[in-house]
Length: 562
Image 1 (cartoon, rainbow, N blue to C red):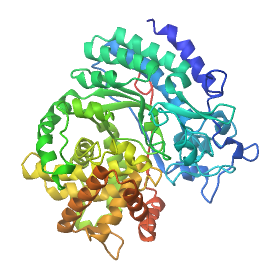
Image 2: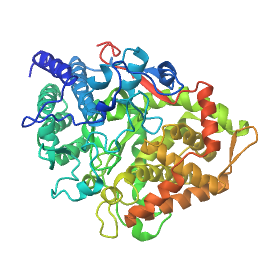
Image 3: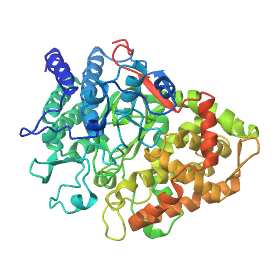
Image 4: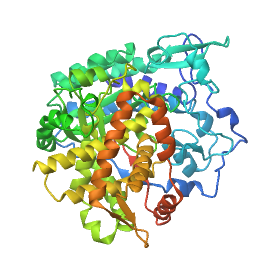
């Protein structure tokens, strides 16, 4: 398909979606997210911080990469995929908020407008999704996937088998009845344009596996059936361009954790780095067998085709671009795919390097005892991040108590607990591989860098699954004396206790997941998933020193020189 023929309608639909979401059967599908609470005609900031001060929590990073080795067709593919990612971005606005013009259209301050765009709405993702614009209440836990004010009992009583589907929106039908609308219908217009773009990419690509994946993904957007495209994505081996696109993660739905939000990454594969990482996948079966938990919680076997790859990411949009940015990915999420074939772990090394240099090192220079700062290294940060993603494939995916997949049994707590599991089992893997001589360097490098990483990630706040997981870990480790807070406000790692705490928390999480113990997890999160006063004071000090919490990307075709 000629790319130029897609440009005008694609840009047109992006413009239209800033005003309204496409309708299905005459219904307005944006939902009724708390826009009506806005007071006055001009948006104003809540609290003592100015909009510029809020925005200063992020530092800007130019998201570029060397694409000189790509062919003209591959560069054209990138431009097409950026257009697709822009459509995905508008779809996520609908899921996170509703009609974005209802908030952006009333903001005059350019700093405040940019901060609203970073957060995809008027709620601060670094501050527990509290509103930062006057006239708005707390963000609905279900974002815009469900009607505002819908009770859990109403949802439980809804007699529709697909209400817990990853790919349905819940809406009222005008008669006071709750209904579900499949994504393929709710986003019908957007999906048609996306499908056309991905099909045109398929026709242009000379990589057979990538072309097949694009074609199957194009079909999936129109059918809400993603299994075949997920399997095809794992079959790709030698493609230099990659694209993760569609409704994928459940983080945005904090009411139940059922609904997948739209996002897109455009990636350039680093073939040399990826080759170096290949060897680690073969250790997964043994590492699964050696997990520090009773045998019944580790009976599952990791998929055969697990891969580790390194990439430079050149575009983020949608869910992955909201608030704190992802620096590594483990996909697909479908438990069927994971058990049958495995997963791919993608290390986004340019984004990772930016966060290490601009955030982690400055944090360590303030918070880690001077005698241990020598242990903060990028290699350790890369390995800890990489094995976090690998560890998503370890442990247990389906409960042993007949409650189905862990994801559905633990509902809104599943994501935070899964991120906590990945952190702990990732460090466990580092420890085991180091003992086998498969990882170089001082083991204390990995541990101290991991400790500094807790302070980096806990700043993401309670609205982030990663932030909540780090709160839980900090409090658990504190109780087990895995570290000591010194009189000067720095922290010293107690290495022996740290190892014990790592094993204990790993076991606890795996048991909670395997049992599908929703009440036990809820109590655990309520007890440990909070920031106590001393930690908050230390985090406030980092902010006062001007150390950013996360990054905003300057990205797009112009940044890449296209």
